[in-house]
Length: 91
Image (cartoon, rainbow, N blue to C red; front, side):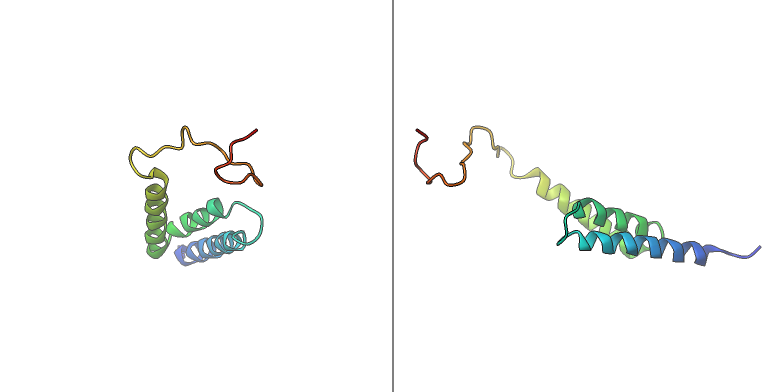
């Protein structure tokens, strides 16, 4: 039986890099780049260790930024409408 692991690895690389490049394009084009880039890394991580490391770093960064500071809340803050001078009460 012929080993086809190199073929699987090549297919995963082509698909993963394609999704990753589409995600990078979505950074400047309309689209959900924040979803597509990790998806491309997840595809690549099935075969490549370096992609797994990048994916783990991305997850840690997103988790860290999503938590915010303890006790910090947006509750009670008023929304400022565009064109309204700061510090001026609404009439």
